[in-house]
Image (cartoon, rainbow, N blue to C red; front, top):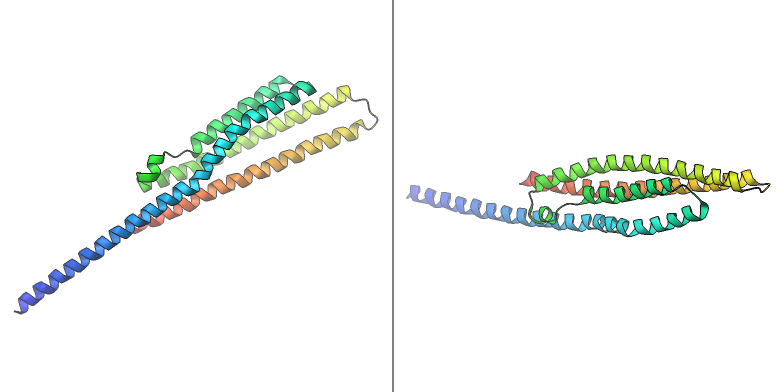
Length: 204
C-alpha cells in the first residue's frame, strides 16, 4: 500500500514538473517573440534613415552642382563629394541592414553576433566618414577663399573671407555634431537589443 502511495506521489511530481516545464517553454516563446517585435520596431528607424539618405543625396548633389557652376569651383571637388555621398549611402545600407527572416525566425545568438558586428563596422565607417568630410570641408574652404582672393576687390576683403571661412567651419562642426548624435543613437539601439537577446538566451 505504501509503495502504491509512493508511486502515486512520484507520478504527481512528474506531472507537476512536466506542467512547469511547459509553462517555462511557453514563457520562453513569448519572451522571444517580444524581443523579435522589439528588434523590428527599434531597427525600423535605421531603414527609414537610410532611405532618407537616398532621397537627400540627389538633392544635395543638385544643390552643390549649382554652387560649383555659379561660383566657378572645381568639378574635381564636386566629383569627390558625389563619390563620397554615394559611398556613404551604400555603406550605411550594407552595414545597417538585417534580413527580415533573421529578425522574425532566425537564431537569436546569430542575430546578437550580427548586431555586435554591425556596431564594429559602423564605428569604422563613422571614422572614415569623418575623415572624408574633413578633407572635403578643407578643400571646399580653400577653393572658396581662393575664389574670393581672385575676384574680390573690396576694402574689407579679409573680413569677408574670414566670415565666410568661419561660417563654413562652424557649419561643418554642426554637421559633425548631428552625425555624432545619430551614430550614438544607432549604437545605443544595437546595445539595447544585444542586452535583451542575452537575457533571453541566458534564460533558455
